[in-house]
Length: 486
Image (tube, rainbow, N blue to C red; front, top):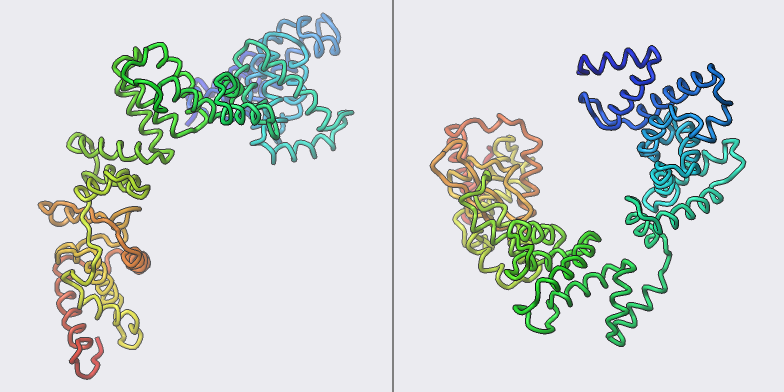
């Protein structure tokens, strides 16, 4: 619900108060007064404010409309509203009622060479050149063709490319992103390729530095590893703080590009006692980021760390997070992961050795011919419980009470029946075989389509269990007699 202060500003804005219109636009850009962030609405109110100020200036005959629109210095009253306009993400306002005004305003601001021109130029660059906005650029090209602009999309692209080069060579807040975008726009950077090839062929470190400075991620990573001496060169324990700082600089740049090896190396650097930036918490953050990106050793480290701290971590089932990361490392053949995984997860890969094996075979037969035997839905669900219980060697209490539809996680099943029997601790059991996954999938589908109360309470389930198992044994044991109906 809108606050009273917001409603007061809204009323004033609707009555033509320029200051209120600008406040309202600011609220839609920043989210103040619990207002949803809506750049399109902000642009509409700034358009109203702009024309209100322009009309006021014309009414006192200070200058012509052409002078006001082309030379903002003639109208200093417009500076605040223009500064607000330059902060609007123009790409997010496309197809909104105020887009045409915003489009024209951004071009005027960009050409004005004022303090806010860089911001306007960057918005136009992002809209027309950013590869991630290809679909929007196609739509914009079509929009431009329908306007009386006396230009086309290709000409405007050339114009903003010049803006991009100027921003990359400037010293502003947009210099770094401009340089990054320049590299992205190169279809095939032959200079980078030749520098990297020179490094690989001749081991020329100057070409490695050049490639890193030009933004090649693998070069930044390689240079950082060499400076930290993680590449086997020299004695790591004697590495100076200065070299580690330089290494961290290049590795951070590579990490920003999403390189998991860079994140892992940064984690190692932050653990070095000779590094002045030693920070165990930051080290863990870097290792966690590397793990998220799929670094095998980082995944094992994260899992082992979570396992050591399991008593202090608040989680519904203790050890579940740790088991996930150790399992991920095990999937990538980390040798140490197998032993630790065995401590965290139980394993029941051989269903023939489990207590419910024979009954599960009978249950499978009953499910395969349930129409013939006229089985009720409650009996079908109990058959699924028997098959799942055999695959994971559950106790009778777990068989009867486990939430079958919630058992499966990516790497294991979580058997937790504390909702009925608080003293029985949860169990984590690894999913080892394809058959186990198929069993969980089939049971999950059956329980998903069943009503939540159909199985009843524990007493009713025990009674049904006795009847179902007796019927299964009677009908499907090797020496069974004639078939009965349930």
